[in-house]
Image 1: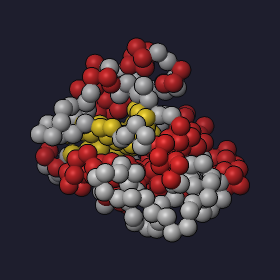
Image 2: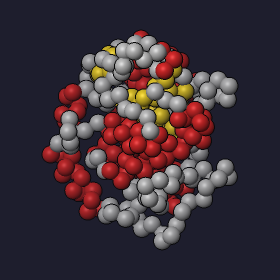
Image 3: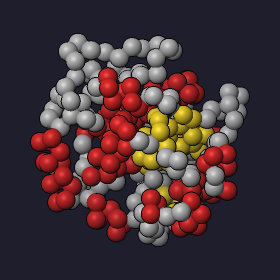
Image 4: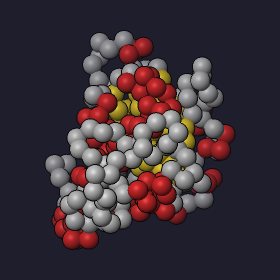
Length: 264
């Protein structure tokens, strides 16, 4: 789809009135003049300094990183996905990286992202994800074959007008210089909103919901297929694990997931 539908455009107009260009992309507050977040191992509030200064205010950054970013690292540096992901299929994911806990500033950001494709917000969240990838796995963050956004079912895409995971993946692609395989897999069955389901129902509702469509060039060697799934929120890991299953069935060697937030 080339752009947001009527509801998406209306939402964008409304958001632009509340969050004018130049303010914090999450709370709308003013950004201090000549302010740059501290960079270094002692400060988790790191935003990539590319394409301009930070667009998230100090208060929102502090709230985002109050609990610290989370993630698991490759086997030589940390364990596989944490048991708290809780779904039996979580082992299909070779690693998980999230910016922080779902709540406060990150919750506001994710809810805004679901309502409107705000480019400044997308760019800022992509910066945070890119920094967390670098912090958690270092130079390995640059070694992805492709980014794979979690697809929406066509009916949900028509309703919303855009896929926030795809838009986020495109922004991360610009930062990491990694291609996006927009149609690597498709959602073949519409599923209820995961937030309305119990943990057990979330796992069963997405089982078999994704099907592989393309893994890129047919000549690509199997060890070249190191894929990073992109989504906005991770809860049980059931949805991204099912995407990983489809990708690995198609020959992907290693599949990680990166999200804006992690709900518990």
